[in-house]
Image (cartoon, rainbow, N blue to C red; front, top):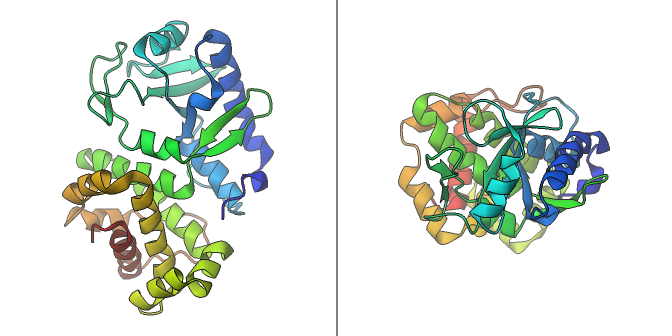
Length: 278
């Protein structure tokens, strides 16, 4: 379904520059340990799905680093200039980069405490998303990894649950954007109409093909993160706050995305049913 070869090559240049400098700063870092997340991940996926309309802009780079131990992470960031006081944000190749350690350094799973910060940071789902991420070949800095669309959506769902608690709602538009990708992807339409499972979803969603596509997204998210993570999402799933999520599910400039909160609710609940939390 996802053809990264379709993505605009210019979207790789900033990531390539950051990775080139990081590799020069650390002999322990390998490109295969790096997971691109955040807005640049979203923009590359958007382009790979064949869409050219602009999304919310940002100049920062967000990278997950599945490094073997804290010594390797500390060595890397010790050679970088901090940007702000978050403890994970650094100036790299004239770009601000968030460098989020995960994997073996998580304790408990989904949580890390970098020495540069000394406060817990959530990296919920990073390891699961990384395990099934796609290879992303950069122009000169090797091959890193990029989440599938469903993997990206998984990270955004939890980011919404985390950040909406203190009034930050930007992740809602990213969740809606992935729904839009699924609702317009020819490969998803083929799955819905031409496979047994897809037809089951179509019937379950009252022959609403868009809802069936979004329910497929929910099933794929569940398959990536696993039953334990799904139960954790279920324990935090929005009740009344879901109305806030629906209100902020905007996909600016997208043709055919509904402004009707009832339609948005239909799609959100379809995804939740696929995920197993609705």
